[in-house]
Image 1 (cartoon, one colour):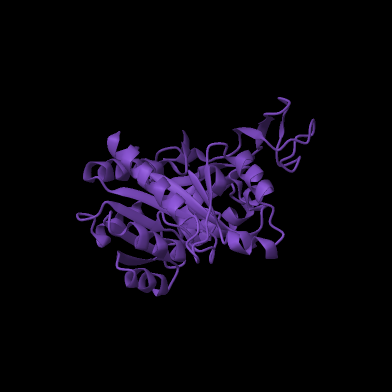
Image 2 (tube, rainbow over the protein chains, first blue to last red):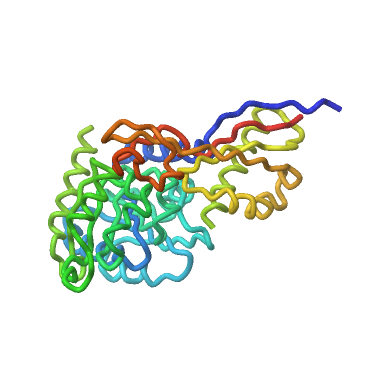
Length: 223
Length: 113
């Protein structure tokens, strides 16, 4: 029998996923489907924000949503009631989606008639940040009750996002949330991230978020 | 749970290497875990048996090497160990840091035949 040998590999554990994510981005580009990966803690307002987004942009853009959760289909039902094409993905205990799961989700959703696909990732500030899903842009929601120190506690999440939405800014008076400090903390982790305060519940700031989304889509199409 | 997902990705990576290199047996893998990777070495060790259960790696040993998280302060330029200093510059207390190393998880070596 052969002797054991030592293979020097020096390969990132995330390398395969990164390769799949890049391939998915290329495929989506060819089909002109803009994929946005939306992340946040559980309960920060992803589904409410998406409902508002569909209300605002549903007439201009053909939107599809993938709802990723460990279990249940309550979010998918909510989104469906707003008239968007939707699919519920169950991760079966996994705390994030990787590029291959995203590809399978998009296939099941059907992207032929879509211009914008949004992945509502599993509510979690740790794991989704580590796996590139193949999205063109990453956005996250930080809600006021979570505190202004979240960017310090979950640095990776804030460093991979192109946009940070600060949700529920209407409840600012009731919480020890320092908006200035929060922006400074986000900037420490990500000097380039765009920051937009919104209130998904009342609709304040939704126009700014939709403007950002539309300008990112047209810039990407023009590339 | 987060570590289990990462370990599944690891098993796929090793699978690819076994295929590409025509290996018959993987006795041990050596993994480098950066202190700033967000991966907890102890959880990796605990999840490992579950991740390799009923795979070709069931008998493969795991060796973990923790790689220090080294950062450079953008304020004063000091280079230091981030974890040992709680992500604060020991020179100027700054928190605007550039990561120089220790933010990845890498398959370093595999002992195989």
